[in-house]
Image 1 (cartoon, rainbow, N blue to C red):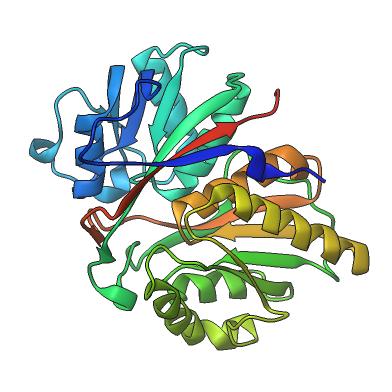
Image 2 (cartoon, one colour; image 1 turned 30 degrees about the vertical axis):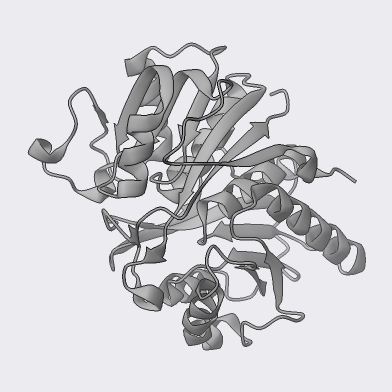
Length: 318
Protein backbone atom coordinates (compact mmCIF):
# COMPACT_ATOMS: atom_id res chain seq x y z
CA UNK A 1 0.00 0.00 0.00
CA UNK A 2 1.33 3.43 -0.94
CA UNK A 3 1.94 5.61 2.10
CA UNK A 4 1.58 9.30 1.25
CA UNK A 5 2.56 10.34 4.76
CA UNK A 6 6.22 9.80 3.91
CA UNK A 7 5.96 13.13 2.07
CA UNK A 8 7.34 16.04 4.06
CA UNK A 9 5.39 18.83 5.73
CA UNK A 10 6.41 21.49 8.23
CA UNK A 11 5.02 24.68 9.75
CA UNK A 12 6.62 28.08 9.15
CA UNK A 13 6.42 31.36 11.06
CA UNK A 14 4.94 34.45 9.47
CA UNK A 15 7.08 36.67 11.72
CA UNK A 16 10.43 34.87 12.05
CA UNK A 17 13.04 34.34 9.32
CA UNK A 18 12.54 31.07 7.46
CA UNK A 19 15.35 28.48 7.24
CA UNK A 20 17.66 28.91 4.20
CA UNK A 21 16.23 25.91 2.32
CA UNK A 22 13.03 27.91 1.82
CA UNK A 23 14.20 29.72 -1.29
CA UNK A 24 13.01 28.99 -4.79
CA UNK A 25 13.55 29.93 -8.42
CA UNK A 26 9.84 30.61 -8.96
CA UNK A 27 6.97 31.51 -6.64
CA UNK A 28 3.34 31.54 -7.84
CA UNK A 29 0.31 32.83 -5.98
CA UNK A 30 -3.31 33.61 -6.89
CA UNK A 31 -4.10 37.22 -6.00
CA UNK A 32 -6.77 37.89 -3.38
CA UNK A 33 -7.43 40.67 -0.87
CA UNK A 34 -6.67 38.38 2.07
CA UNK A 35 -3.84 39.25 4.45
CA UNK A 36 -2.77 35.60 4.55
CA UNK A 37 -2.12 35.67 0.80
CA UNK A 38 -0.50 39.09 0.51
CA UNK A 39 1.83 38.79 3.52
CA UNK A 40 3.21 35.47 2.32
CA UNK A 41 3.87 36.93 -1.13
CA UNK A 42 5.89 39.71 0.48
CA UNK A 43 7.83 37.30 2.69
CA UNK A 44 8.74 34.63 0.13
CA UNK A 45 12.35 34.53 -1.03
CA UNK A 46 12.35 33.66 -4.75
CA UNK A 47 14.18 34.79 -7.87
CA UNK A 48 10.85 35.55 -9.54
CA UNK A 49 7.39 36.01 -8.06
CA UNK A 50 4.17 35.81 -10.06
CA UNK A 51 0.60 36.82 -9.34
CA UNK A 52 -2.21 35.06 -11.21
CA UNK A 53 -5.48 37.02 -11.23
CA UNK A 54 -8.43 34.66 -11.53
CA UNK A 55 -11.46 36.30 -13.22
CA UNK A 56 -14.00 34.91 -10.76
CA UNK A 57 -12.66 37.21 -8.02
CA UNK A 58 -13.87 40.17 -10.12
CA UNK A 59 -11.20 42.69 -9.16
CA UNK A 60 -11.25 46.09 -10.81
CA UNK A 61 -8.12 46.81 -12.91
CA UNK A 62 -6.96 49.56 -10.53
CA UNK A 63 -7.02 47.09 -7.61
CA UNK A 64 -4.47 44.71 -9.13
CA UNK A 65 -0.69 44.55 -8.57
CA UNK A 66 1.57 45.62 -11.42
CA UNK A 67 2.83 42.83 -13.63
CA UNK A 68 0.17 40.32 -12.64
CA UNK A 69 -1.11 37.79 -15.16
CA UNK A 70 -4.81 38.29 -15.86
CA UNK A 71 -6.99 35.68 -17.48
CA UNK A 72 -10.32 36.95 -18.73
CA UNK A 73 -12.27 33.78 -19.49
CA UNK A 74 -14.26 32.59 -16.49
CA UNK A 75 -14.18 28.93 -15.59
CA UNK A 76 -11.60 27.59 -18.04
CA UNK A 77 -8.88 26.31 -15.76
CA UNK A 78 -6.80 24.74 -18.55
CA UNK A 79 -6.69 27.94 -20.62
CA UNK A 80 -5.75 30.04 -17.60
CA UNK A 81 -2.88 27.90 -16.32
CA UNK A 82 -1.40 27.13 -19.74
CA UNK A 83 -1.71 30.79 -20.76
CA UNK A 84 0.03 31.91 -17.59
CA UNK A 85 2.81 29.40 -18.12
CA UNK A 86 3.43 30.51 -21.70
CA UNK A 87 3.18 34.23 -20.94
CA UNK A 88 5.59 34.12 -18.01
CA UNK A 89 7.97 31.79 -19.93
CA UNK A 90 8.53 29.53 -16.94
CA UNK A 91 11.06 26.74 -17.23
CA UNK A 92 10.10 23.16 -16.60
CA UNK A 93 13.00 22.26 -14.31
CA UNK A 94 13.20 25.20 -11.93
CA UNK A 95 12.58 24.87 -8.20
CA UNK A 96 9.05 26.05 -7.65
CA UNK A 97 6.80 27.02 -4.75
CA UNK A 98 3.07 27.63 -5.03
CA UNK A 99 0.90 29.36 -2.46
CA UNK A 100 -2.29 27.33 -2.75
CA UNK A 101 -4.21 29.57 -0.31
CA UNK A 102 -5.81 31.90 -2.84
CA UNK A 103 -6.24 29.48 -5.73
CA UNK A 104 -9.78 28.54 -6.67
CA UNK A 105 -10.20 24.81 -6.40
CA UNK A 106 -10.57 23.70 -10.03
CA UNK A 107 -7.59 25.82 -11.06
CA UNK A 108 -5.53 24.26 -8.29
CA UNK A 109 -6.54 20.70 -9.21
CA UNK A 110 -5.58 21.35 -12.83
CA UNK A 111 -2.29 22.98 -11.79
CA UNK A 112 -1.24 19.81 -9.96
CA UNK A 113 -1.87 17.78 -13.11
CA UNK A 114 -0.15 20.40 -15.27
CA UNK A 115 3.02 20.31 -13.18
CA UNK A 116 3.13 16.53 -13.54
CA UNK A 117 2.97 16.84 -17.34
CA UNK A 118 5.89 19.26 -17.12
CA UNK A 119 7.87 16.52 -15.34
CA UNK A 120 8.23 18.30 -12.04
CA UNK A 121 9.31 15.68 -9.54
CA UNK A 122 8.83 17.90 -6.49
CA UNK A 123 6.79 21.01 -5.85
CA UNK A 124 6.65 22.90 -2.56
CA UNK A 125 3.25 24.28 -1.59
CA UNK A 126 2.38 26.89 1.00
CA UNK A 127 -0.95 27.09 2.81
CA UNK A 128 -1.88 29.74 5.39
CA UNK A 129 -4.67 28.91 7.81
CA UNK A 130 -7.04 31.74 8.79
CA UNK A 131 -7.56 32.59 12.44
CA UNK A 132 -11.31 32.52 11.78
CA UNK A 133 -13.65 32.65 8.83
CA UNK A 134 -15.26 36.08 8.74
CA UNK A 135 -18.87 34.88 8.97
CA UNK A 136 -18.20 31.62 10.83
CA UNK A 137 -20.44 28.81 9.51
CA UNK A 138 -22.32 31.32 7.34
CA UNK A 139 -19.21 32.09 5.28
CA UNK A 140 -19.92 31.90 1.55
CA UNK A 141 -16.89 31.22 -0.63
CA UNK A 142 -18.48 31.09 -4.07
CA UNK A 143 -21.27 33.20 -5.51
CA UNK A 144 -24.85 31.97 -6.04
CA UNK A 145 -24.62 31.54 -9.82
CA UNK A 146 -23.36 28.03 -10.59
CA UNK A 147 -22.56 27.85 -14.30
CA UNK A 148 -22.14 24.11 -14.57
CA UNK A 149 -21.04 20.96 -12.77
CA UNK A 150 -18.40 19.12 -14.75
CA UNK A 151 -15.12 17.24 -14.66
CA UNK A 152 -11.96 19.25 -14.02
CA UNK A 153 -9.67 19.26 -17.06
CA UNK A 154 -6.97 16.53 -16.93
CA UNK A 155 -8.95 14.73 -14.22
CA UNK A 156 -11.55 13.27 -16.57
CA UNK A 157 -11.99 9.54 -16.35
CA UNK A 158 -13.28 7.20 -19.04
CA UNK A 159 -16.50 6.12 -17.39
CA UNK A 160 -18.58 3.01 -17.65
CA UNK A 161 -22.15 3.20 -19.00
CA UNK A 162 -23.07 0.93 -16.10
CA UNK A 163 -24.07 3.24 -13.22
CA UNK A 164 -25.59 0.65 -10.88
CA UNK A 165 -22.93 1.14 -8.20
CA UNK A 166 -21.54 4.62 -8.72
CA UNK A 167 -19.74 6.19 -5.76
CA UNK A 168 -19.55 9.93 -5.06
CA UNK A 169 -17.10 11.18 -2.41
CA UNK A 170 -17.75 14.79 -1.43
CA UNK A 171 -14.98 16.53 0.47
CA UNK A 172 -17.55 18.70 2.23
CA UNK A 173 -16.91 22.32 3.15
CA UNK A 174 -19.17 25.02 4.55
CA UNK A 175 -21.41 25.57 1.52
CA UNK A 176 -24.35 23.22 1.90
CA UNK A 177 -25.86 24.51 -1.37
CA UNK A 178 -22.89 23.15 -3.31
CA UNK A 179 -23.05 19.83 -1.47
CA UNK A 180 -26.73 19.57 -2.40
CA UNK A 181 -26.14 20.50 -6.05
CA UNK A 182 -23.38 17.93 -6.50
CA UNK A 183 -25.40 15.26 -4.68
CA UNK A 184 -28.38 15.88 -6.96
CA UNK A 185 -26.12 15.93 -10.03
CA UNK A 186 -25.10 12.35 -9.21
CA UNK A 187 -28.45 11.44 -7.73
CA UNK A 188 -28.11 7.68 -8.19
CA UNK A 189 -24.62 7.40 -6.71
CA UNK A 190 -23.86 6.27 -3.17
CA UNK A 191 -22.72 9.42 -1.37
CA UNK A 192 -19.93 9.59 1.19
CA UNK A 193 -18.71 12.74 2.92
CA UNK A 194 -15.04 13.37 3.62
CA UNK A 195 -14.97 15.81 6.54
CA UNK A 196 -12.06 17.75 7.95
CA UNK A 197 -11.22 16.45 11.42
CA UNK A 198 -9.16 17.62 13.16
CA UNK A 199 -10.25 20.91 11.63
CA UNK A 200 -8.13 24.02 11.10
CA UNK A 201 -9.50 25.52 14.32
CA UNK A 202 -11.33 23.82 17.19
CA UNK A 203 -14.77 25.24 16.33
CA UNK A 204 -14.56 24.76 12.57
CA UNK A 205 -15.51 21.07 12.59
CA UNK A 206 -18.79 21.85 14.35
CA UNK A 207 -19.42 24.73 11.92
CA UNK A 208 -18.74 22.32 9.04
CA UNK A 209 -21.21 19.73 10.37
CA UNK A 210 -23.87 22.39 11.00
CA UNK A 211 -23.73 23.43 7.34
CA UNK A 212 -23.57 19.95 5.88
CA UNK A 213 -26.66 18.96 7.89
CA UNK A 214 -28.59 21.46 5.75
CA UNK A 215 -27.81 19.24 2.75
CA UNK A 216 -29.01 16.09 4.54
CA UNK A 217 -31.94 15.48 2.19
CA UNK A 218 -29.78 15.59 -0.96
CA UNK A 219 -27.02 13.49 0.61
CA UNK A 220 -29.44 10.92 1.96
CA UNK A 221 -28.03 10.74 5.50
CA UNK A 222 -26.85 12.92 8.36
CA UNK A 223 -23.19 14.01 8.09
CA UNK A 224 -21.97 12.27 11.22
CA UNK A 225 -19.12 9.83 11.77
CA UNK A 226 -20.20 6.46 10.47
CA UNK A 227 -20.86 4.57 7.25
CA UNK A 228 -21.76 7.77 5.40
CA UNK A 229 -18.68 9.81 6.27
CA UNK A 230 -14.92 9.55 6.66
CA UNK A 231 -12.47 11.86 8.39
CA UNK A 232 -9.05 13.29 7.64
CA UNK A 233 -7.18 16.34 9.01
CA UNK A 234 -8.26 19.54 7.27
CA UNK A 235 -4.63 20.72 7.09
CA UNK A 236 -2.93 17.53 5.86
CA UNK A 237 -2.98 16.54 2.16
CA UNK A 238 -0.94 13.40 2.74
CA UNK A 239 -3.15 11.85 5.42
CA UNK A 240 -6.14 12.82 3.27
CA UNK A 241 -4.66 10.89 0.32
CA UNK A 242 -4.09 7.85 2.60
CA UNK A 243 -7.64 8.01 3.97
CA UNK A 244 -9.07 8.22 0.46
CA UNK A 245 -6.99 5.30 -0.74
CA UNK A 246 -8.00 3.07 2.16
CA UNK A 247 -11.68 3.88 1.85
CA UNK A 248 -11.80 3.44 -1.93
CA UNK A 249 -9.78 0.22 -1.87
CA UNK A 250 -11.92 -1.25 0.93
CA UNK A 251 -15.15 -0.21 -0.79
CA UNK A 252 -14.03 -1.61 -4.13
CA UNK A 253 -13.06 -4.92 -2.54
CA UNK A 254 -16.55 -5.27 -1.04
CA UNK A 255 -18.81 -3.89 -3.76
CA UNK A 256 -16.74 -2.86 -6.80
CA UNK A 257 -17.83 0.63 -7.80
CA UNK A 258 -18.92 1.12 -11.41
CA UNK A 259 -17.85 4.79 -11.55
CA UNK A 260 -16.11 6.95 -8.96
CA UNK A 261 -16.49 10.71 -8.59
CA UNK A 262 -14.56 12.92 -6.15
CA UNK A 263 -15.69 16.49 -5.46
CA UNK A 264 -13.28 18.63 -3.36
CA UNK A 265 -15.30 21.41 -1.70
CA UNK A 266 -13.35 21.78 1.55
CA UNK A 267 -9.83 22.99 2.39
CA UNK A 268 -7.06 23.40 -0.17
CA UNK A 269 -4.75 20.91 1.64
CA UNK A 270 -7.46 18.24 1.46
CA UNK A 271 -7.95 19.08 -2.22
CA UNK A 272 -4.23 18.47 -2.83
CA UNK A 273 -4.65 15.08 -1.18
CA UNK A 274 -7.54 14.25 -3.53
CA UNK A 275 -5.55 15.35 -6.60
CA UNK A 276 -2.45 13.42 -5.51
CA UNK A 277 -4.32 10.18 -4.99
CA UNK A 278 -6.01 10.57 -8.37
CA UNK A 279 -2.69 11.15 -10.18
CA UNK A 280 -0.95 8.22 -8.51
CA UNK A 281 -3.69 5.62 -8.63
CA UNK A 282 -6.96 6.62 -10.33
CA UNK A 283 -5.99 8.08 -13.72
CA UNK A 284 -6.66 4.91 -15.70
CA UNK A 285 -9.85 4.01 -13.87
CA UNK A 286 -13.48 5.13 -14.32
CA UNK A 287 -12.92 8.05 -11.98
CA UNK A 288 -13.18 11.83 -12.29
CA UNK A 289 -12.76 14.86 -10.11
CA UNK A 290 -15.89 16.98 -10.56
CA UNK A 291 -16.71 20.50 -9.42
CA UNK A 292 -19.62 23.00 -9.38
CA UNK A 293 -18.24 26.02 -11.26
CA UNK A 294 -19.36 29.47 -10.11
CA UNK A 295 -18.87 32.76 -11.96
CA UNK A 296 -17.83 34.63 -8.79
CA UNK A 297 -15.95 34.10 -5.54
CA UNK A 298 -15.40 36.16 -2.38
CA UNK A 299 -12.17 38.15 -2.47
CA UNK A 300 -11.63 37.64 1.25
CA UNK A 301 -13.17 35.02 3.54
CA UNK A 302 -10.69 34.48 6.38
CA UNK A 303 -9.35 36.84 9.02
CA UNK A 304 -5.74 36.76 10.23
CA UNK A 305 -3.09 34.05 9.94
CA UNK A 306 -2.95 31.30 12.54
CA UNK A 307 -0.41 28.94 10.98
CA UNK A 308 1.56 28.48 7.76
CA UNK A 309 2.24 25.06 6.30
CA UNK A 310 4.78 23.98 3.72
CA UNK A 311 4.06 20.73 1.89
CA UNK A 312 6.74 19.07 -0.24
CA UNK A 313 4.65 17.31 -2.87
CA UNK A 314 6.30 14.59 -4.96
CA UNK A 315 4.78 13.75 -8.32
CA UNK A 316 5.05 10.56 -10.39
CA UNK A 317 6.61 10.58 -13.85
CA UNK A 318 4.10 11.57 -16.52
